[in-house]
Image (cartoon, rainbow, N blue to C red; front, side):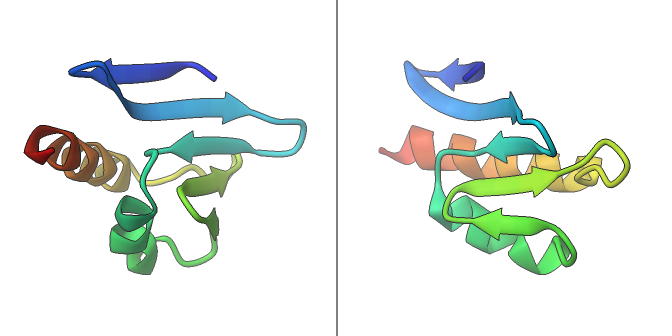
Length: 75
């Protein structure tokens, strides 16, 4: 899985599957924090699934990165 790292820890990753794409912020807490803004998307522990026709809003992706970055930096 391609992923960006911060301080040697995974920040956010992406995967293309046969029927969807996924964003992995490597944190169930991050997904839980943005879940209210992702109605209609398939969510699971640490994963947001979407399609090219129904992408994750840019501001939500930015928020996931901000939240994950804060998690990494406080540890």
